[in-house]
Image 1 (cartoon, one colour):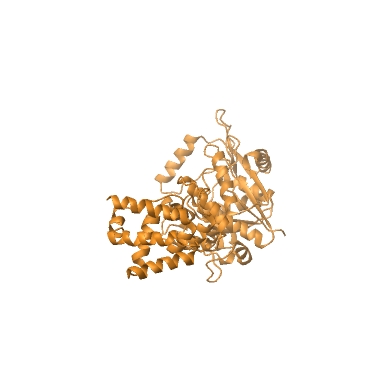
Image 2: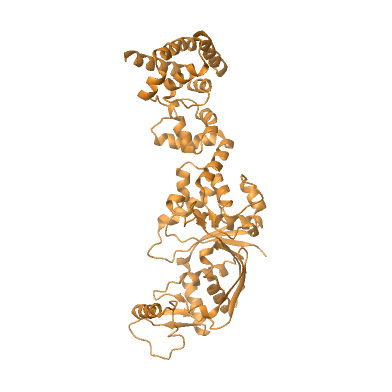
Length: 466
């Protein structure tokens, strides 16, 4: 048997964290077993499905590296197939036309709620001999078994059993000829030979209904695995404030795709105590039995920490390319300035996202005016005197490298009988407009002799006017 999984999003919005994790688990399971991963777009919600959402799904999947072997398939291109099978069920006595109007159904629901009953279709057209009303376009309903149980073993949740009398006769085809979710998904999974249906546990109540349709079609049941939902850090349903945003938003916020994949894999799944692992290791280790039955909690701080680990190990040229996008948005001409790869290598140990990396790199490409507070604190008369001496020392260096710059600073420290920060802090303020930078000698080496002296001259001249 060839293992075959699928990811079947509805294009009514962006690819969010929960959907991405479901896609990742389905993809990893297929790759682990040398199987195939299918992408299917469930676009039968005509009012809400959009091309923009379809593009967002493709972009998110591509960025995360979740490549599919078949598809994308679109349900709206398969309407005839659904209608043909519905007709087959009608002919076999396993489905029927229902002419109940919206008003009738609303009144039925109202009466059931008033009586304290669970709202459900009462089967009024199931075996009806009434003459169909001429002004009602019917739906096609499935004849759900009236007795017995549907039992199946969920690969995550264990054995699940539901009484048939708890289920009503669901609609297969709406009056406009478009199939409902529970019908279309069954035929799609059967036609595409899906062996394992891995999806969120918000679908677990749909599974007994779908199993009854599969049995009516005398087809082979797939295996089911329902993944628990993701909650916010506060234990409530995941909201935008707690991370329920588009997957591509994380790209725009400066996260690396491999960090997000790693984090999503650890949301409800684990391999021992491993926290940081590659995509290849995920595929090697992945199994459904290690998925927790309890909801996972989304922790932005943990994601941030993971991203930091991946940034530290990332290739400098790749990071420079990613950083250049953010620098461009800040109006920095990174083509005219120091080597961005060298800047990235210097800064990446100190930051959490690519956006932070760009923020930290800005001063290499344009002068940052220090705040008045920093000037008053560090560019005192004593501080300016020290910097003026250092400027002369730096201007005379034969070699502009980190070792020579460091030695020049040490010489000034000795000359003025002060501690190293007495020189380094004012220098940082005058060069970067702030007090927090990597080692200042490394910063000056990358910035270059000309730009360093230019900034020192400008700031010392400005200070002397005050």
